Image (cartoon, rainbow over all chains, first blue to last red; front, side, top):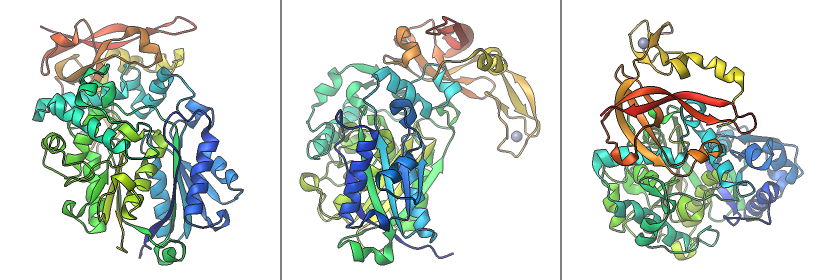
Length: 389
Length: 132
Ligand SMILES: [Zn+2]
């Protein structure tokens, strides 16, 4: 079967943060309409809709977001909600991608949305724990900061990693967030701020953790052959990979890296016919600072145990050798769980179109998104190119 | 995690409370919790009792907890490699995080987990404590 190529021709994104004035539906509507306007199409052009969301029922009393996404646009087309914990947005994106590749659809709207601040922090902690293994992690009193702290301790025990190197991830991501108009935290922080913030799960302090965030993001995908009809500078999907690992962290053979990232990356890079040297920027899943360190190594940006030094040397800033998380990442841009994977696509598309303003990576041509569900049971890696692949 | 009914707890007697997993009849590999399909292709298993003795692979102290564990913070969680092979996540009790070391010996103990909000029903399970 010859697969068709796919292009991104429109993006939409809401402000990320504590968006008290908007509920789940209003967030979703804002992102959808923005993306359609950016693609300069009417809703009637859309053949299918996929919406990534993790906790609509738990946090907003609303499941069935497929129905919500289509009814906002007064459409009767196939509309489906996709769930894979914090990777829900990327899974929705891949469903859209495959629908066009296979010839089932020509124009797909992909959304990611999460409304998190209408419930208490403890309730959010409980809800998010649904991304882990209910019996062998949830019942035991594990939390997500706890799971990533366990990985951090295993990583430190294996390779060594200084407090400063870990904190430098947060400082860099806040620097980028300060230059992203939709980011939750548009404020720079210092290493000292990270050291002094409240301990959540040793070695991770509050400023090592991504926040609780409301937000939505949407992208319009179409058959690459027709992309230029709608968009002067379409961004093409050059490769995509998805892999899985055990639901519970304890069952994995190694705790200091995420195997599913390595598997998904290998698929995506092979399909895109690129190596790590070709990358101009990457948006990685930094739900915690340690996650960015592991992602850098799992994506092959550096050798095992070397990411901390790269970050400390400032090489992962937008104007550095290897820009990582120019959006501010989950850390500073915010982490509305179901929306994050789509937000990453929005950021990479804006960078490749030269629309990233004060955080623009000069001459960016190839970008990667990396989205993790749970502690690594689901991972999606996508490769985007400015020119036709 | 959510409020568990009595039926849920009844269903979990074997694995949660008695440390019984299984072993593949084809290759002998042991599993805790029990597995349905072995990577070797085996589908037949025999029940396997675990000793509850093992080594601490990694641990941390949780300071911000889900609703039902909120009153228990801070508490220590960790991943234990059982002597028979499998790894399992659990709370580490009877010790402060500062007294623990990666690689140290631990053993399973039957402990109270939490009391249900409305009914006050006590929930029990397996934790691990250090063996110094
Ligand atoms: Zn076997």
